[in-house]
Length: 508
Ligand code: HEM
Image 1 (cartoon, protein in one colour):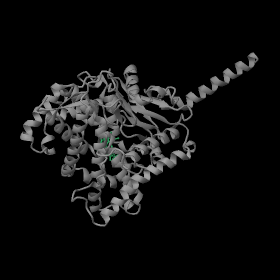
Image 2 (cartoon, rainbow, N blue to C red; image 1 turned 90 degrees about the vertical axis):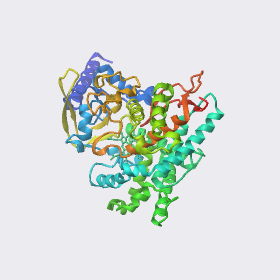
Image 3 (cartoon, protein in one colour; image 1 turned 120 degrees about the vertical axis):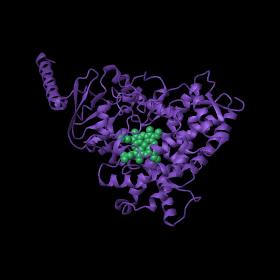
């Protein structure tokens, strides 16, 4: 190749890059560090894909910037802004422009069929408000308390089965696996009124179909985000709809049951409650829209609660001091094995502190629900030296609310953030954070998690029952098969399960 050609190629590349930079990279004109993301190579690296929440946190600590922007080189007009700074989180959740942070367009794509249109992914606007109002009625403090008979029954099954497993494996067993089935039975029963019995039989078609549905749709999403809908093989869509239809049939059969006036075991269900109210028009005229609202509850309320219980049990089993504090509090409030009641459990400070602290270190959905800008917006925040900084959002930008970052950044907390230390919550509702928006495991504002009271109720009642019956200690694990780690698949889970032994208290 002649020297002239090399010079011409270099000049062309330089001009191309300059044009690219000026047109795309400089257009944001703010203080947010920018990186060109190449999926699987630097963002997230393929070997780190399961711990991307930790990678984001580490990067944020390393550069001291708690907001960052990534762009795909071939889609430079749209950036993804990861926000872990409480000032901007506040704007996203409750600021005067909160509606500019809408749900993402991709949430309307076919790969999201099972819950697109459900409350989590429905765009801001009339249909979302109507759905939120309807479902909101089934998640008030009073309604959640009325779910106690179902919660108590499922809890009893869980404890019986865990006790049997414990007897079979004196060195310890994985309690996360049991939580997974317990929370699935609880949420399906509360939502549709169906007692699926997966606690007794993990091979039931429903749990299998649900797990496959989530796995296949993650794969589908991944292909779409890197290449586009055209690249999704037919085998994936077929597998998706096969599983989708199992869950859909379960819901529609319950819809028919409610419409024909039958209730299950004379117990309540969210579906029964919903159908007693006035359905918004868009759900009356389109049954699929109604089905999706219910599927969303299953999606939102299963993994998240199971993760909270798993991480809670991990820490309680490794911290007998706090376990004893919670036990003393529970046995004092419910002497002589009195039945547990949510009203009283909600007022126990140590129980509340351990749950809050667990959600600080392991917010089940570490990036919340994705958002996408429906218009341009420029916001300011102060860095740690009090200097004013700007972040420019452009229409179409994807925005991730990274509460995992704000909850784990030393700058925003007055005690070490890497320690599980529930005491930070005893005297301060903000846990010693410099802003009430540094802590947001359930989000905040108009789109705050609807199931928060239910999730907290399940966590409180389960932990209270466990610690008043057993001393919960770590599994004997010389080979490290339960080595503690967490991984990310939209929600976080304990990567190797949570190994425990349950020592009945009379013999402990
Ligand atoms: C520990 C358990 C849970 C955690 C940590 C959690 C967390 C979250 C988060 C972070 C959001 C997004 C908030 C935002 O982007 O502003 C959310 C939304 C939502 N969650 Fe939960 N969640 C949990 C359990 C549940 C349960 C049990 C249900 C119901 C069965 C539920 C139903 C919902 C719904 C319907 C939304 C969407 C609300 C809307 O967009 O209007 N969640 N949740």
